[in-house]
Length: 117
Image (cartoon, rainbow, N blue to C red; front, side):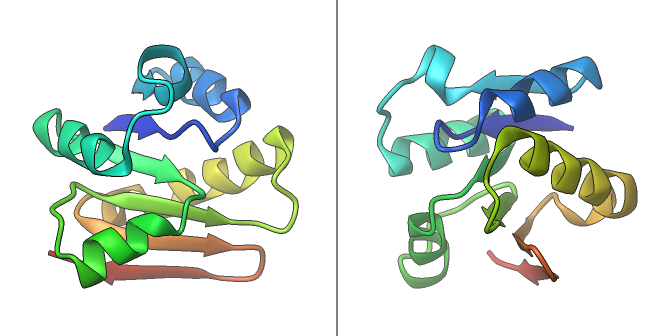
């Protein structure tokens, strides 16, 4: 699985994913301040699941109809790196097969996966 990690997500997540040998592009390293639409286009072109905490992507996908290859939206009360990594690791251990092509919202107390075209 390939990931594009938005700059609003901590670098701890990027380091964790790379340690797990995932193919990862960190926006903060390669595309700082990139437009959300450009990030979606890159994720589609390179078949990457976007990891973000930016709720604007929900509007772009569900209201404006932009394509994606999968979006993981982190909506955590504790958004420190260690907590983001802990939660994402758990999701990857149990739901990896459900991330591609879906819009996944991860909250402290729940996980919601929606198919979005």
